[in-house]
Structures are given as structure tokens and as C-alpha cells.
Amino acid sequence: MNTHIWKPRSTWGLIVVALLAAGISTGAQEPRSATPKVVTIAGRPYPVHPAPLPARIDLPSPGVSQEEAEYQPERRPMDPRFPPANSRTAETEALPTHSRLVLTSSGTYLTDGFAWAKRTALSKVPPDNGGCYQAALPDRGGYCQRDFVHQIDGAALLGLHRENLAMLRQFASHQTEARGWFTLWEINYDGSPMACDYRDDRHFWRNTAGMFDLIHGAYRQYLWTANPALVEDPILHGFYSRTVNEFVAAHDRDGNGIVEGQAATGWGIACTYNEMPGIVLAESADSLGTQRRAFEAYAGFLRARGDGAGAEAWAAKAERLRRAFNDTWYDVAAGRYRIGFDHPGRRPVTGFGYETSWFIPYTGLCEPGARATAYLDFIHDRFQAKPSPNIEAWTYLPDVFYSWNQKERGWRYFQHVLDSRSRYPEVSFAVISHIATRILGIEPDAPRRAVTTLGRLPAEVAWAQLDHVPVGVNDVLVRHEDGNRTTTLANHAGPDLTWEALFPGEHAVLLVDDAPRTPTAKAQNGTRVSGVTVTVKTGQRRFVKVPESLGQ
Image (cartoon, rainbow, N blue to C red; front, top):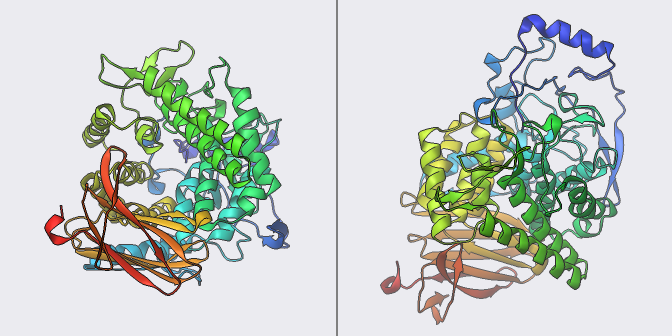
């Protein structure tokens, strides 16, 4: 989510008058008919109502870094006609929902935090929303590429599948050749461009990382739902294909296969989520990481379409990008990865870049090993020395450290995010996904009717249980206890489920319903884990544990 410094109140009227005279829309949206538009999603019509929270105008302020631009409405002069949304209402009056997701635990910290996050996230789904939820700054009535993708997992866990699909299709439908194969950065609830980031097809906010993130987000939704529309829908498939083909060709100026930026902010095409004062990147690690991950996701979609050869080709392209990064983006003298190359000189940049740095491990761009471990230390140390005031930035850090099995650091950053109780929509959705996918280690694979678990409870949590987790058509319970040495999975409803139960360390034996089984050991981002695969039939509850004498 891009944030800028607001112009002083004294100049506000002049700016509005000038923009109106030029025919440019401001945050005050044109009066709209009360009759909603109707969109068709997976063959079903849905009304799309106008945004209840009008977008404001944001003018670009070059040189303002994202980490220095935390959303602070009380400090930012605003158009008095459009005050921010009432935070109390947004956090306490959730809409009715069919989500039955519920967390129980040995203590109240997690359960209270989960209850807050669920209530708050569901309050971001506007009435008669026609298929969307808020994924932008709290006073904007719409959704942004970056925020939306980071909220997809939390939304899927809450059963907002229709919304995820509809929002993906909206982004896909706004991609055009006239826009350089970019789609819109932010979209109003009614599907129109958000005025603060769009003037016309030549002047709108563009970020290469966000484009690739949308494909990854779509694939995450596919893993949660196995919805064939995510594979077969012509609008979505066209977007995936054009992004990895035409979009890459249009923005890879030197022909090395890596998409490039040419400005410090999205008004001139940025290739990083972190706007660094005084630095313009031609290539950035976060854009490269999301590009690699998008190629990997596209390979998964092709595989689901039965195109095995195409899937192998794109998986190989993804691996070539990873290989190029690990072979040529490491600065031996500095002892860390480069985060990019500047524009126009193509000089290497090796400093700490917040998102530009932590997207390296977050997107799986770096290979496990001593370099990656040292870089995770570098990220942690530099962030602790100068933490970002931007709560959105913090929401990625539990993902980063938990995914590399550094659960103590992951828990520390998770606590900061949860304790903020921020009304920024990304926070509540991220807390839901942090608990499910990071702390409880639930990884869905609905197309294969499978799920993987790896408990990462902190020492102060004796047990935690998440019930009614939707994995495709299955309704699942996952429980970890005994210091992450015992995991239970129940399949309340749906077909037989294949469960891979993983545990940290290498173990000679695991007990499946008290019967000994020989596990398989493997590496997960440099950490050894042991696991067994178990079939859990409909209505069945099974458990796997590390024997006491062998527990670690």
C-alpha cells in the first residue's frame, strides 16, 4: 500500500480546483446511481454497490519512504468533506458471517487476539459488497494489489472465497495493453479506478512486484479451495498468461528476463514495495522474488490445466531466476545479498531495504544455507536498530521468520502485530493467517485433498486448536500440544483427506494413533523435519506424536 505525505491544508483547495479544471477526478467520487452494477462470477450474477468510503486524493511526494509514512490520520490534513471511517464501528460491529473458524488455547492471549482479528476482519466486508472486502488504507473504500494479496490467506480461512475470486477477476479485467499490461493498483468497491492512484492510462500508480503477487495470491486461493474457476476462468487465465509473457517482455528492457522499474514511486513504474529516498532501482529483490514466485504459480496453474510440458517449462524458468539471484546477487565483500541495481547506472545496492530485503527469504528467492541464515540475522538486527513505524511492514515479519522455522523471532513479531490492534485491514487478516499457517503450520493443498501441519507453538502456549478450517470442501480441526510433539487432526466433513504430519528434528519413530511408524526426514528451508502421511476419513479424528523418550 503506497502512502504519501499530504499537502498542507492551505493548498488543498487550490489542488482540488486545479484537478477539476483539468478534468481529473479527485477523491470525491462522481455521484453514482443507487442501482448497482452487476458482475458475473463463476456463472452467477452479483450486485456491485458504490463504495461507502470515498477515495481521497493522494498526490505523489518523491523521496518519502514507505517506512516513514505510517498511516496516521490525526497528523495528516484531510478533505473535511470525507472524514476517515469510524474506527470503533469498524472494529466492533462485524457483519453476520457464515465463518465458523474458532481458536481455543491454553491461555487467553491467543484466543482473545484471534477473536479480535476475526471480528475486525469481517467488519471490513461492506454490506451488499457484491464480492469484495477492504484491503487498503482504513479510510479508502476499496482494495489495493499489495494489501489484497497479503490478506488472501486470512480471507480464505474466514470463508471469503467469493470475495477473493471477485477481487482477483476485477484486477485481471483492468489489465490492458494501453496500460503497458499493468492493471490498476487500487480499485473502488464498485470496480472503478481509485482516484488517488489513477488519472488516466498513462498516469497511474504502477508497481511490478504487485503484478506478480496477484498470480501468487490467486494460486494460494486455489490451494485453499480447489475452485476450478481459478484455473479455467478465461479472464483470470488470460491475466496470468499476459503477465508472465507480454508484461515481462514489455518491462524487461535489457533482455535478461528480469522485469525493471525506472522511478522511485509508482507514478513512474517502481519495482520495489519500499520507496527509498534518493534511490531509484532498475531491478529489485522483492520484484525478482515475486516474479519467480509468479512463474512457479503459473506452472501450477498449467499443471492443473493438464499442460505438463508447459508446467515444467515455467517451473524451470522460476528456478533459473532463483539461480541467477543466488549466483550473481551476493556481495562477497559485504557478506550479504544485494537488494537491487540502481537506475540508470546499474550499480549494485546492498544496504537494508526493509521489504526489498525481507522479500528475499519471504519469497523463497535465497537458497537455504549459511548465507540465508546470516541474512535473516541481518534483517532482524537492522530492523531492531531502526524498526519501521509502518504497521503494514511488520505484518510480513512473522511470515518471514516462521517460514524459515525461526519461531522465537516469528512469535516476537507476531506479538507486536497483534498487540497493535490496528484498524489497518491488513493487520487483522494477517493475524488470522499468522495463527493458522505460521504458528499452527497449516498448509493446504485442496486440489489434492491434502493438508500439511507443523506445530510452532511458543513455550508459553501449552496447546492450541483451530477448528472449522476450510480446506476445499473439507471442514478440518488441527490441534498442537505437548511442546509441539503431539498433533491431532479431525476431518469433520468432506472426502477422505491426506494428512502429512511434520515435526521438527529427525526422529526414528513417530506414533500414529499410538502405533509406531517410521517417518520420512526432509529439509524445510534448511531445517530438518520428520513426518508421516496419514489418511483421515470423513468423521475421523487421528493423532500423531513424537514418543516421550524421543522428543526434542
